[in-house]
Image (cartoon, rainbow, N blue to C red; front, top):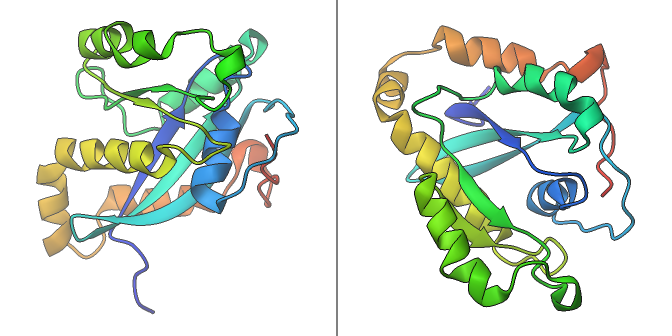
Length: 190
């Protein structure tokens, strides 16, 4: 059976409750937008395969609950991401760009200088997105994937010569299980 991807990465969506993390995930993975909002309880994930620089990347995207009461649950998943204190790859997203009348940060402030300054301060790229209108959804996830690939370039070179590195085999086993031991992941509704 032909391999469907070259490498698997785990990415985390982090942010306050109601900012649209689940909607971003559904728009990217399923090309769907559901305006009715149902808060994520604990942690959920979806997967998508994209190609970046000739490498087929399977992205396992973990959608964490934004409510404070779920922080002990969501922190458990931070350790399972492609994470290292000095080498973590991240981007800053300002979502719901389509809702001008509800805007909390002025567009000028979002694009310059505040968000750009904040993003630079923390070493991040900045994207203004809208899950509703599909603004910068693919671009932001693709950029984050590029950053992770760049950070793991040496490991990827070894991947091209090895048949099945232990990390990849373990990740493939883990992807078959959902949080809480359920066999079927829940449907994604925003």
